[in-house]
Length: 513
Image (cartoon, rainbow, N blue to C red; front, side):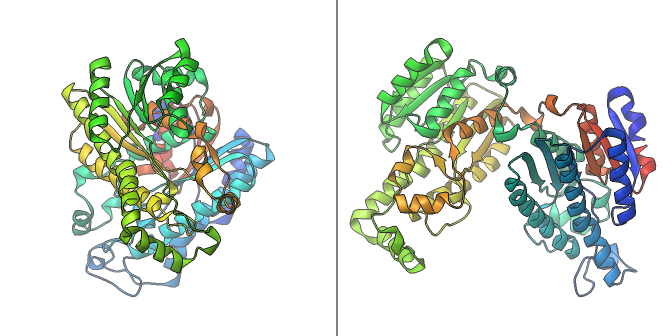
């Protein structure tokens, strides 16, 4: 049915395959190799719900599985499909890429929020399998990193998607999860997959493509805070070169003035001296931008300080970390430093975001973007990290999520996004003790400021609803499992229409035909 619907709009090969049957899986991979030479992208989507509980029935079981009894075979069937098949398809895909010496490939696992949280109404075996998928994706990332090739592993974790699988849930369970009108659609997942595939390695873009994609932002205004060096300077230069008018602010305005000279006639940049912890200077900055360019369309919240306490790093342990946190909260001298750090790293983010949204509303703009530069220290607490810096970055993560909820209510395409890098080689590292820097570098390769600028450009370039460019994947081969309906069917059709050769497999092959 899908092949007939697609017609000449793309290339789709239906393959009947039970992914829990080793012989059928091997035959499927052999068929794809014989037909198209190999696989470049693997979309692991096939899954089943499984049992509602671990030890017995609950209030939903009588509706969903009224004749169902738990057996070891049932457990194995779900885990074989949801986890083992996913691992095996990933392994075979990587082998295909290695054999052909391909420098780029992608494995995308369709997971679920149930792979991160256990919900009362979820089938528990499904929960267990999706937690395992999350671990598989992270393990794949670590293994693929060692290959030194651009073969990536990604995971999409939606909430309730309105598919045939969702219809198997009892009505009262669905109502506890989400209303039908607020649920995601299979097409949303297909758009997300296309969005992921469209991101080039290291988020680099061909300059011609980048300029064309950024065309709709040409002439619009971006505010970049902390723009005198490092990440902020790289972002300001990147956006100015793509045609945006950039208001670049920092306390060291002379550094930005040098950037303006370097930019020359390749872009438009205005240097603004501003201490973001000073309310009067911030208000004056916004007034200057409004009077000069009429408003702000993109706000890049980047300015931050580390706030490293003066203590020998080799003495750090759990006791000294707790002691330092108490000391920094209670000591008169350091309460001032704590407040200054939070004024810059947190409150300035909130205020600049608020003023930007006000500017967009006043001009009745339908599209705008707030991008907060967070950190992995805003998601995990590291033993070696500065306590106040970590606390502030956790706060930034909460700000971004709160902004998303508030902006959703405006019914406009004003978005909030966060970039959370690890260690980035900037001047900020000059303030980190050398022994600590050596310790951190031993665990992770540092990024460059240009990497973050490329990520920001990529984020801004993506139109609403995740539409993306797919030229470089045209003619390459994608395997989509569980492709007969729902998410898998939507992904298979989306990639085929984008020019990929799609091997779509399922047990119900007539639907794919």
